Image (cartoon, rainbow, N blue to C red; front, side, top):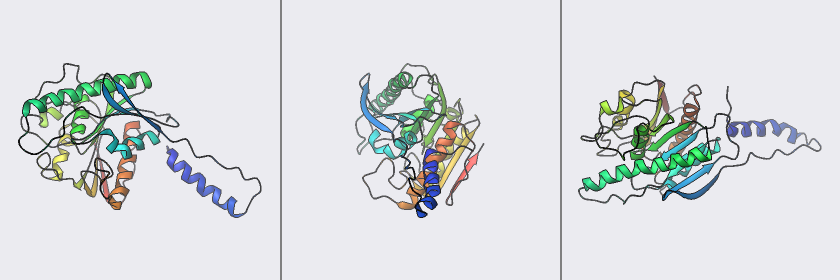
Length: 290
């Protein structure tokens, strides 16, 4: 059984408690493991939030992360920093795109923004290849960014890409938090059927975001259409699109029950990325393995 550093620290603290109670002389003090560090850098003009672990995991992964619409990489520190805390290198991109306002979207601008997202991720992948050479690459994202991650892992949209090869060479797994449902003229079941690598999908029963997900079950479309195993589907009871504002909208009030479930989803995603067995989900969550 693999034990995370977080669990190990708690275990050591529990073991140390009796010794402290007996006031043993010269009891050694255990230093906590070093935490992750983060820096803001640019790669080919692309802003990237680069997380490095204090202590790399023996199962270290290089995680490439794409955020949702109307967001930045900084809004996902609970997720990307959580991966780094467990020993993984993370390149979280802040995509170079205008905020989506009200009114009808400009299709040409949206298509250009999509191609730019893919180009951003290629730049971040080049950075990870230098920072963590030889480390397995994982494509990850939330919402619109989850679809980016899926395309990097083989999913096919009905729009042309940025001219680079797809799937992105080296991507070994996908971590998709709240991926969108079918979008007419852009992505459908046959596109997700082309996913070429194992995939983890996380969502919740309150994850409703019209029009990309008019019901929470819409987020299951990619999981159902994909054919590569293993595939994990993690569902949290009452979890919304932002996990109670743990990701995407951290400036808003946090829902503590969703925060608890977020930690469970985070640890499940790490187990999947590392190729470990599926963990037992906590009360309020289910995990389906195919």
